[in-house]
Image 1 (cartoon, one colour):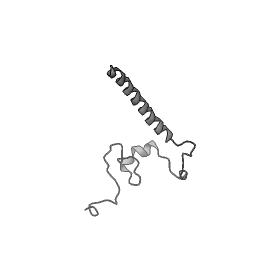
Image 2 (spheres, helix red, strand yellow):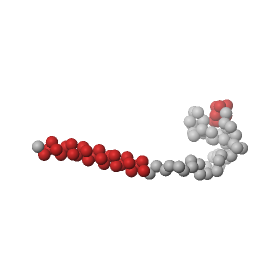
Image 3 (cartoon, rainbow, N blue to C red):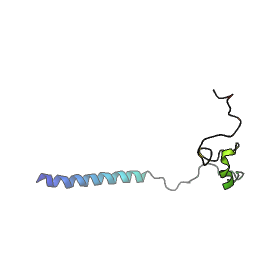
Image 4 (cartoon, rainbow, N blue to C red):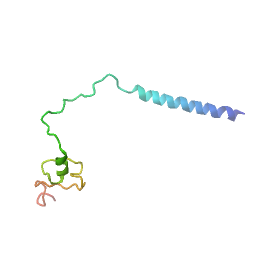
Length: 87
């Protein structure tokens, strides 16, 4: 008989505990603050076109993709890195 009473009580306690965690997380949300705390982006930045993205693998001045190009080879076409300065 006691088992029939303990199971629902445990479920209710678990539910109350879970709601407490959700309420605690919601209380940590920051409201009413500005979304930008740094200076705005410079207006002198160049627009990146699709042609620039397509030719990124042979562009030694800009690194436009996370791995260098759409091929994801991580190859750098510049002249600063060569066999003489890599040990």
